[in-house]
Image (cartoon, rainbow, N blue to C red; front, side, top):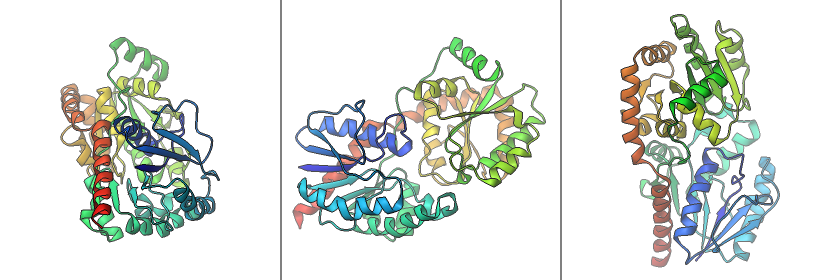
Length: 379
């Protein structure tokens, strides 16, 4: 069987949540199924760092995916010809992009519908492309995969597709995330916060991540803080808005925020493990991989009680109302003062993390491919 896979986000050094999903799943899937041919389709020359089994071939289909007009050219016009040329039996898209003009059975992985619910977080042309074409892709796909039961229900309701068509496969976690020694924790705190304890946030700095309320909550927390707690922010200011900036500039304790930009996995692991708590109080998430990364790094977690986050966190995190600044600040104060609570959450996180793995994700996505082939054979 020839399986053609969209791998436009598989760029080492620039992997985000969906990029990691693509990498981790394909590494396992290609190795586990040597009887099939996998064609990984890039929009640029693939990195030499990428190593896959012999049953995998790299294909470059320009142009680079940098703008909605180029996406349309690439996916709607050029991709159908490539699928025909490669004699594709299945087209798998791990990041939601598909094509409307092919008879090849398609499997579409739609991680969440943030572009539907929070369109203002996304540039005009990009959100219009998503909101016009992704519903079409969802209806055309033979099967849809997604990363949480929350997203499954959202896709069914919003795109009006059958529940039977949507499969759930939770994300896993990079196994480079692990606990570190006390010596390393001390060294990390000395390096980044002058030895002081700190909260950590990891993710994009965009409105739906609730950045402004998180800053306001930290300001409230600091008024009672007696430990000189800092707040490390890991993520690019790609969508830093005027509202976020106004809140930041108006903060009483903004000098206790430390912005580190994007960090590699090794550094990020140290930052998680040496932190007091991950604060991840987004308004909307399809999954929330930082929660798992914190569980594996053995640090406590504060997260939101909405969308997919309770599904991932279970009883291993302190849940807050993301719309209530005092609720977030109260959780910060509670977890900062209560070492027994932090230790309890860490122990629960150790158990919770065992429910999620990339091996399981890859196996479930292969089951989706298998279901699709069985449907085709019955026709």
